[in-house]
Image (cartoon, rainbow, N blue to C red; front, side):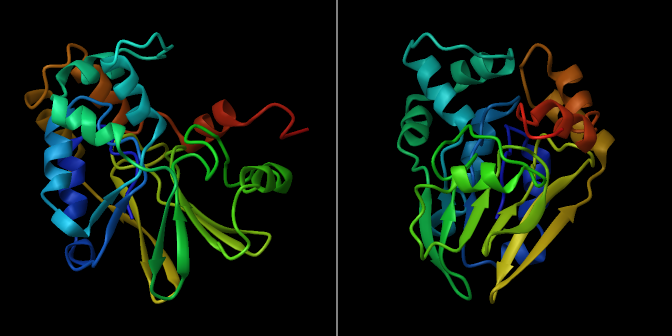
Length: 245
């Protein structure tokens, strides 16, 4: 299970080359695939995985589609409008048709709910240390037999129980917080393993700069591929009002 690639091809390639990823029957990517410096190349590489690939819509994917449709939406960065303009019509249609959430049967787990922010909203923020009440609110639309939820959006990997539900966040491929490299998760025979793929960061930055025409690609790659933002920074920024004393 992968998440939050954000248009970064070299790290995606490194993760897809992992033996256990190559051997997997199913690869699910839980959103925010293309909003970054190499949007078209990342989508093409994902689709090369064929029938074993499942893509879930993320908030950034929805925003790319909205921008291409000329909708007036607020975007907090420059890379998303740039990325939207790079996509082909077929790629826009692909993103527009992505499901959220997606429920799949996984051996050892039963029905697993794959989402981006939360099952009810692709942009909902729930953190590993969010209070139980916030998690319960995020799960209000889940059926009682949905006991495993796999999400993304916050770019920090974790696995935890929430009132007997298992919640897994694989972190981020392209914009990790706290640790450079690609984070992902393996679900196998009822067990969860959080994995990390180390990369040559300098080489990855060079590859992004060489493989993109995004005007600010050098500083973007330096910030995100080098994980300039720590997990502590991200938790401080994302914690919702009232969640801490």
